[in-house]
Length: 163
Length: 163
DNA sequence: CTTGTCACTATGATTATCATAGTTACGATG
DNA sequence: CATCGTAACTATGATAATCATAGTGACAAG
Image (cartoon, rainbow over all chains, first blue to last red; front, side, top):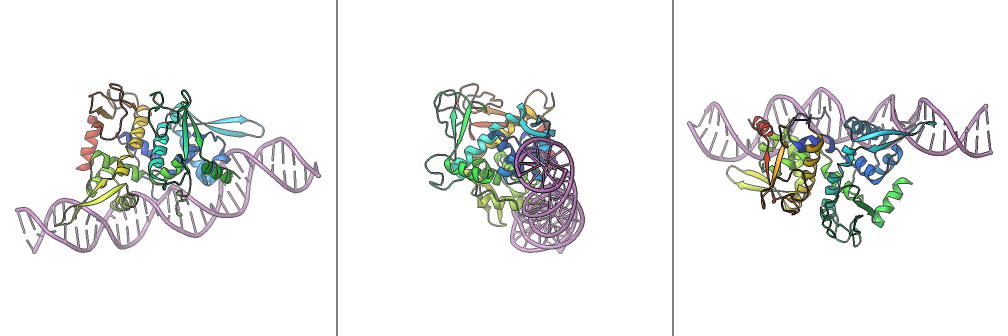
């Protein structure tokens, strides 16, 4: 490609988000970070992306203050990547993407009887489905309010990628 | 690039969405469609994307049943692109992206005193800010419930691109 | 019969992406 | 103390997606 068109000069909020989020590698890495994977190799293995691409995107996310690089050990040097508040606030976007896919991107019965990824509202224990507000207690849902549980098929896939 | 990694074989719902949405051209085109731009040239002009890329992405979106190509006139042949139900259901994703950008992607005071794009709840008239449920009446918000109003700066930018 | 509009398609230069291999720093094993 | 293993990357070369620009086909208007 030639250099990608710069969208940071637009006033449109979707355009500004698209500058960062209109990239499959970024989305996959964010997904893994929300899932709790913090280490470079774990992210590279699960996403299937090459180390070069993971490296470039983590640097980008760091520059944008979406993740922080953190040394969790000095000898030998080991790092992990953590979502900042700005990064954690992207949960709504990923949650909306997941909801749309659950509703439209699977064949009938492909995921067994439930969603590919189930979310439980910690506060009341209700399965929230793909709702924006908890169907049990009516509270709006954000990162931290929910506990994700992958289906058996998704768990198996992740185990295969990690192995 | 070599062929982009295929994500359609994953069980992860974010991965499946990322296959389509992890692309800045797709996101910009969807934004314009939600904004009411249906014609090829209008989309190409406003997004700043080349006609070749717009053509390729509209074909992709059509294949994925996200948009429908519709002839609105036969002599000379003219077409427009409309969101399907599957496409309209992507509103939640774009709305979440817009909310995140409004909260994080602008300098202090850059947009004047309000958001770059204001949304009003049609049912009760409340300005919903970046909320998931209407702060006025508590109803969950979807496409059709909201009326978008670009700020003066955003309007000026769109006029400039169209001209 | 020239100009204009809409909806594209064609061409060529540039560069991001992928696959694979290599590097650095260390700790553990034999 | 030499080798092996692991984490976190960097280097290299082939491939293909993207951009900018130009061109096409169908018609309508002046």
